[in-house]
Image (cartoon, rainbow, N blue to C red; front, top):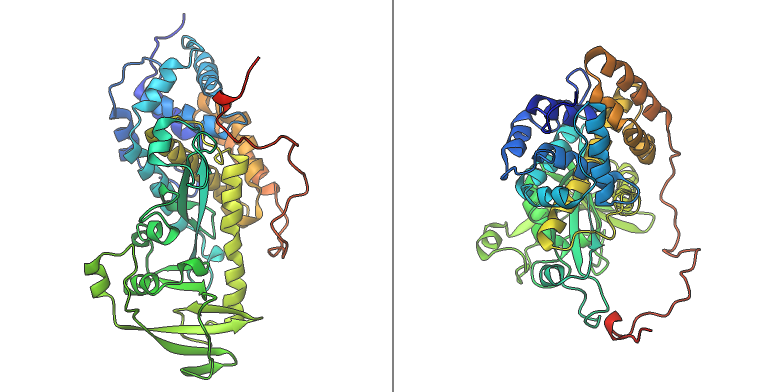
Length: 451
């Protein structure tokens, strides 16, 4: 005889944790605290007996990890799970699932991303650190979404595009751990307009950094305000120097060949994204270290040239490109380059769920690395995704010793999927495969003649 329609709370929590190997006897436990899981369970007006908030979130996670990203695939995942647990099979109608997604709270999803990312970052093995620092990477990227009125209103397309010919576009700035690859925090906003640039969005993320962190960023982030705010809270940094700055290594305190400490005066013109009160609190001058390696000029707040030689800092900075690879992984392999949701509110939730799924996969890679004496950055992300896809339904039905017997071999399999290590290739951003020979649209599709 089949069981009742709704899974018990205990079974929902167990299934949610088992799916992504959230076990107490494994490293990096407590990625999503029990209090947050309980808050997610209690959120919203639960009308569906099948798609409760926890079931909906788990289905949403596997939807963004699937090869198609379709709602039908998420519903099919829930159906297989219910059949394996001897519950009544749900309908393949996607309506109840989509309505349940609307009731998920964005604040809970964002908290799950930051909580999981910070646990991974803070609990990273000491062998994965650089001179005792937990290295953090920052960069920005853009995402597209369906051309709907709601999306266009919140995230309008680029002004150079005619109406009906472009896609709404959102800018995302993220903090990523160099050691584990986890997303620690992120901020999103429109592509253009006031307070929508990368540095403006980054200002909302500074509070997520701490004294043990060392931030790597490109020259877009090298501004007086950014350096002053980071220095104020004790966060060290290594940035590329802006190309418009003239460097004279004969000035300042000499540390070595093309390596010195200089005083930087506070600009007279206030940075656009900072408030008048915050700008007034910034110091009138800053001490920064400026050095050049192979013709590239860097700035840092690590003043000790003996403990932090300039060549070591330059080699570390070259690791910054890994955040670009991480964004490529999320956008290309996980399908976030073109989002699927048709309202701005659901787009925000879709981005959060993508990053949460990314962090949960990164957690299993970190567990595999920790248990097998490897480094997370040396293991394949897509191999871990493929293993998770194929074993999720099996992990849900197992408990105790039986679950442990299957999870540990899976972590060993992840550890065996190593990838080659290479420095960033010095190549232009070009593609080999040419696009199809279709002309670009010059007017909205509805205006084209149809037979």
